Length: 240
Length: 258
Image (cartoon, rainbow over all chains, first blue to last red; front, side, top):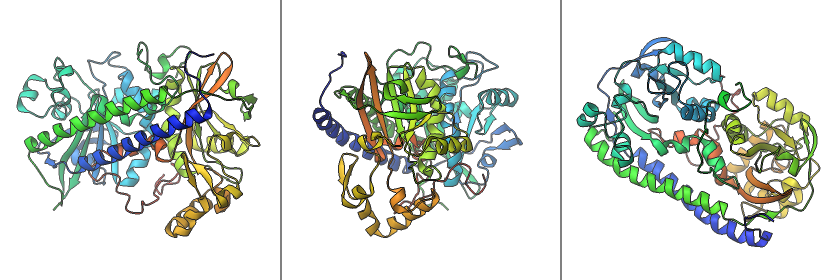
């Protein structure tokens, strides 16, 4: 017999139905927060940024590619990432494996999705080919783009401190030297770009469905993250 | 000019930081429910099922492929379908890349459908996926785990998502009937043929050779596998699907510019 409690179908069903009510409540709460995000004020982006893209240099409004909404995944691929300058962050690569084809549906909702990183475009393209991904990926190079969308006060930009809206557990991180992952949203209206939303750290959990799948496996996502997640080709017995 | 309120960076930051607290509470609640799922009793699966797989006929314990946990996505592809359901196909676009990572966590992930194996194989090739996909045709598996329905059940009532449903009764709603008919035509069958299947996700554990059913989720409980929704929940205009929601999801090779 397993160590885990074994029950009858009736016992399971009673417990499962109770849990269902709590799951539904969570879904409703998640819908509510989505509405609250839409109510955040829009902040005009006045600084000009230039990005290296597969189609040459582009400005932030040009990255919208004719759509009115832009989602930027801040993919960690810079000097602070293990494997620099050949390969991107393992955690971001794990998330990219989940979002790669899913984001192809976003343009049909008036949303352009792309990843941005510090590494030069050639390095991004080479790694993308190696991983077999197809999402657009651009380089912000030496510009302040990532810093400007990671900390939002003058003090923060000067010291690099204050990641994830001053969450205490990240107090030691200096964003001037270290890249971290996140997601930022922008709106384009009458030629003006507005920043609408950014999320970091566990705020990006929901963007990777693999976490949610593991949350439904009998033993859950577990708590030993030694050697996992890795880039696909780094798992034992795998070359790609 | 936009109907949206434009604000200063300070105004945004104050509102965003307040929202962050509510987002963190949601994450904690989600973690809590994950723990609660693990506390559900395990129910021994005593019936024997046989599945057609790329490597020949296999039993349920064999589907674990040497791992101790099995996650099954119930992909809507009934015997009468010529192609898989477009929404399940968008889910597959999401989970396909996660399989290798789950395998490293002692979890085997696969899809099970009732269409014959050859149809599943051909469709998988067309869509470019790599997850394992097996056929449960001729077994009770899909019916026992609440995702397949006989025509009699469609007419007289069945249970889906832990609630009684009369699938044919949704057709009386008019608008829904048009949408269902469009989906049925899309997968190459009629309404009765289409409604033999609904989506879901089930989890199983293998211990000392015995398989246990641990969890199943349906309807919006499985929405997280549509990987673009969490992104849409974070864009300026949200999902923006209208009411009733527009059925905009297509197979990735069927969008106008694909």
